[in-house]
Image (cartoon, rainbow, N blue to C red; front, side, top):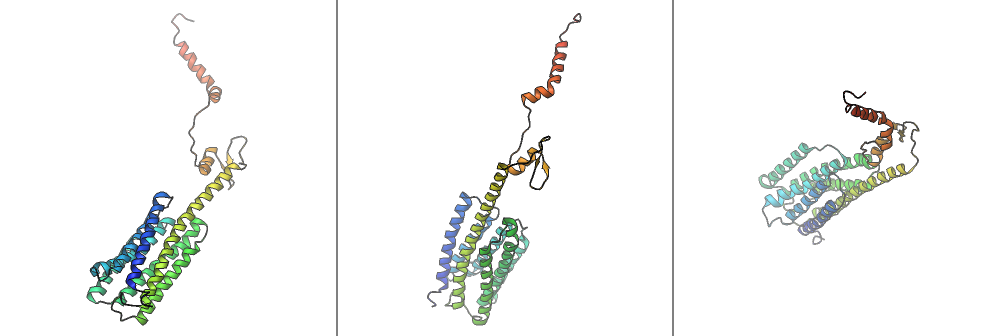
Length: 300
């Protein structure tokens, strides 16, 4: 069983999968309609691919990269997913909190790598920080997405829930079964299984967020179609002042109604008939004044 759960191989495969997903997201970002936050999601996937590659190279490159750098990049994966989702739904960012947590993670990873080496402490610390971000991300999805899109994205809710539960289980099993482990790359049922589960969940995360982006595209399309149907239907209009009654019962000027429902802006002018009707006397007076100015002193 250990051969199938080789941590180095699993980390390399996970990095490769994340790289492919990153290319897919680059294509969507360039060629398709996206919303605020998609760029942060893309950055998060890039960090995940880089972090898994550094993890796979542990032992071949210095620990400052394969341990501290890998932990930081993998944590930034979830940080940027959270930032992107917050931007997507219009929630204020918590940059100071996020930066402080990443500084704490780097300091703790450095301590448990060089001062008091402890693989299990690094695993527990890393998993605990990711669990907090998972709860944060789940809260944003559960509370804000229904307000924005008028419906819950249950796929992402389930993925986040499994992700957080998996991190908690990893912490407990590490403390109970592998507290004295001295190397992450050594054969380990707990860590190998965790890497497989989280690799699958990472793919589900990305697919769920891409679906969320397209879900918003569909929502915008449905809104536009509803507005078009409104314009095609019978519109109540005042026979006297030509104001239009909207769905809430308020009477609006024609220009305001069209601007709100059809993204149309009016520029005002006056047609020849109305000019003749409204300004005929003014034009005549101007002409008379002009003609009178040509009369000589003896013309009466």
